[in-house]
Image: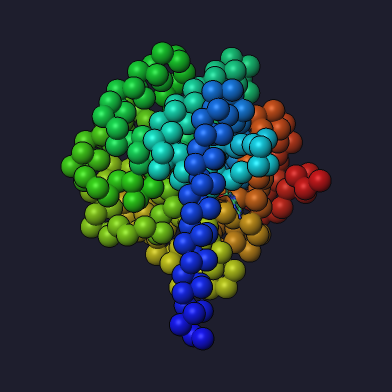
Length: 288
Ligand code: C2E
Ligand code: MG
Ligand code: MG
Ligand code: MG
């Protein structure tokens, strides 16, 4: 009977919710241990300028050997956010990035900027600005190395507080990037109030560039960003056609598998040594 089917599917749905909740709890417990035991890694994905030169990198956390196999940050970061573990995770990533930048700086291996993802929960916690600026000061690294990436949704809740914090961070010299632009809810009017340096166009909008570049949303986003004096990073650039289209639209910075995937620190530096490819040609040395 139809009624039985409805009831049946409802219970299956409930069961799957319950097992998902259980698994989240397991992941949460394992993640906590993984952080403590230093089992996470940070990988680095190159970002390239419009002139083809290296601009910097984005730091992306990895959990390669969880008891459940490799788990994506797209899965465990939200679980960390729900459980409050995000603060411990975020601190660990930041610390790791500072250590890595220190090594690179001392060996003259890198002088771009490193973009670090910061969760809305970290940003909202009182003292975030003070702790972040203090930690950077103690590192004695040039402030120009540092950029933080925040998502629109994370900045929405309290605009006054958000603007205040962003102003303090920028006065200190930290660059601010708005991540995943176009996927949240913010209006243009809202966005204009935010003191930002960089706007990252989500992969979603880069994907559609294969077809119609000039009438694309990416085109609108780029010209709007430039009017607001922001630099634009295109995320998830995978093809030479997308690079061509983005070049025509005067995109400033490019990031995606077309150039390189996120890599462990040593591989990242090796990549920067052999990277000489023009913007619109795939780096053949990359694919193994
Ligand atoms: P995100 O910050 O928007 O990072 C970009 C994501 O796109 C990364 O996924 C990156 O590996 C992927 N990507 C880059 N180029 C391409 C491409 O050409 N094609 C495709 N298909 N994907 C590409 P990843 O590393 O799995 O991270 C997913 C999300 O997890 C990140 O999205 C970010 O929101 C979050 N995340 C990662 N690391 C951290 C972290 O250290 N802290 C926090 N709070 N969140 C993080
Ligand atoms: Mg990001
Ligand atoms: Mg993004
Ligand atoms: Mg994303």
